[in-house]
Picture 1 (cartoon, one colour):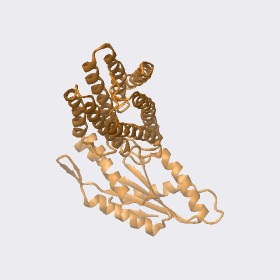
Picture 2 (picture 1 turned 180 degrees about the vertical axis):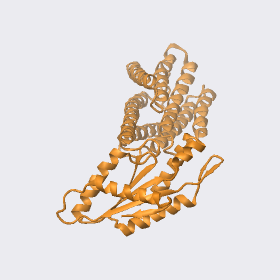
Picture 3 (picture 1 turned 135 degrees about the vertical axis):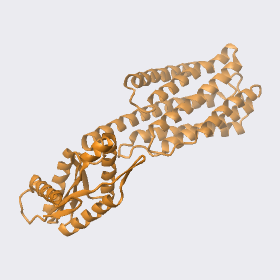
Picture 4 (picture 1 turned 30 degrees about the vertical axis):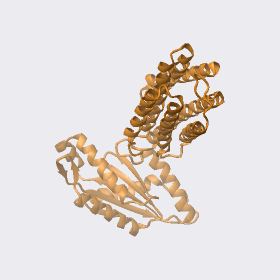
Length: 385
């Protein structure tokens, strides 16, 4: 048992130092600092457990249980911090209640080994279950979820260990002096905790890495202000859409969408309000498109929508839908109501069999010319070429 406790303390301490070093150096990872502090408390719980061997039984019992509860609570908070904006906020009052109950029960039943171990094991089972529920909350929206499933696996093992331990306590009164729980149960429990410690920490770090990779990918392909595709991603998407249209001989349409008199919005209301207007309009345009359509910010206040399998008539219907949606609902920014209109240029093409690769720049130029014709015609209108 002393060797096992020392191994757990060293392992948890090394993990804590590594995680805290990364968290303090970068300061960009959600929940990583909290996770590292939890590991530090976990490392301290093992020498606290060992204090009973030198006669400090009550201090050992109380401190070890408090530190263990703090570890699980901090790890639940760390996962919640990572899941921010992806899942509903958890009811931390339940977790805090279990942590406080864990300490109070350990103190209240200090002189009754059976009820102390049973009640503390039950509250720690609840904390482990709370941690498992947090890890099950929605993680990354992208397919990179390996880290989350590693954490879930570790939490399932932890819940199982505490549940089995509690069940064994209910039916086993063979308490060993000092440790108060059969030695084989203690050893198996701590070995399982070591496994969970490694699994959960590796999983949480992997979650951070996967999220960072997803963010990098999003920055490379999406416009930072509006969240739609950027110009580079648009060209890649156009190549794929054009190749499919050519292969299947289906129509392909492009909408060039430009906000009317957007400079006046910036001049009269400020650039921050202008940014809000751009985000709002981009969201409205996206809402009027199909899942297979592509929306990108082409530059400034210009957007391009690529509509696969859509002819000129269908594209015109979509353009009218967008025109009405933007025109009929002024943008609300705080206490300001800002009327906005758009001008749209629409072009469509149906590649023939064996036709050479589409000239996307020419197709965009046609839509752009149509959009400027709409501007010259009085704005707030559509021109189809």
